[in-house]
Length: 442
Figure 1 (tube, one colour):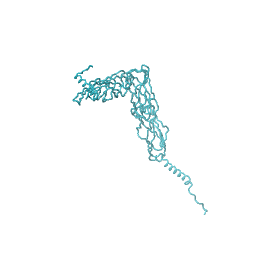
Figure 2 (cartoon, rainbow, N blue to C red; figure 1 turned 180 degrees about the horizontal axis):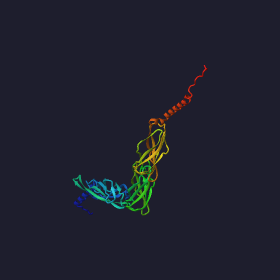
Figure 3 (cartoon, rainbow, N blue to C red; figure 1 turned 60 degrees about the vertical axis):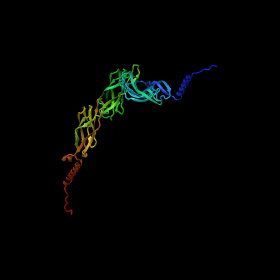
Figure 4 (spheres, one colour; figure 1 turned 90 degrees about the horizontal axis):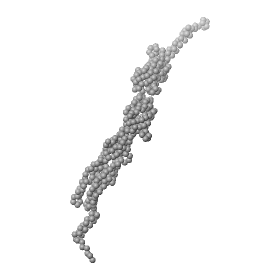
């Protein structure tokens, strides 16, 4: 039999190795020797946008880092691995892209390896953005563990390092027609009437549209209603201006102010597909109602009289009127032979004189009366219009002296009755005289 004799020193080394392995396995923590965060970003959803669009751009931020080398050691670290990004903040910048970033820097927090988070950034694409591909930078700042330092058997000092990196996010901007309206001509739009709205529409986009049609829409609670809604403008290359003339109607309730209206352009792209541009809001001025004033004060008449009165009207509006006629409405105790008088054309601020022959009853009460008068005219589109009623005051007065008696029917009735009675008395009684008794009748 052969006996193998193992040296004592070899036995001691084997025993020590086995003891270390058993001890480490039984009570061990991870100690990382290497690793770093690897953060990547991508757009969640579509990455092509339309000029003038405002939206939330959602980025998915993910940590692809890993701790490549670590050992198990008694008393090792129990903290996060060096691949964990701590106190992560993200800031999106426009770079050379035609964007406005409406969001501030976002605080993300801790991002462990293999984990991800969604971050929204509010952005607006410039209305005149040129179509194409753009790169926008995303700036990241975070902290990570750079090293560990063991002090004794139970204490560890973690050393942190601040890191920063910039990720590039690719986006696309679509070639479209975007519009603005640099000039508006509202041709004397008044309440209750119709008129023309001339718009100079500019293509500030990067697409040359074909078969373009300009459209207008009524604004929210606006009294301006399109009569002509569509105007064909044809080819519409970038930076060009096309003129479109629309007919609109203004409701009677409109005041003197500016009201909103929406403008858009329908067009075809190079492939023949039809698109509609984003709405552009314009302000349309309304002058208000055409107003007339009576400027020559109150009128007066003697009761029982029939006379011509003159009333002076002034065009107090901002637009001219044509073929104006004044009309007055007579009520008791007044009468008219003709209730209409021609004034002619009246530019703003000009006056016209109307003449009416009016008769007032002899029995009219002595007081001040109000009669309604109005102006019928034609506007610039040759449409017949009628003004709001205007009140004209006519005071009925009593005549003086003998004329008062002559024109007072009551007094005249009494006088006539007295004259008739006196005539009868003198005719039948005084002529015949009293009868005398005959002799011998007693």
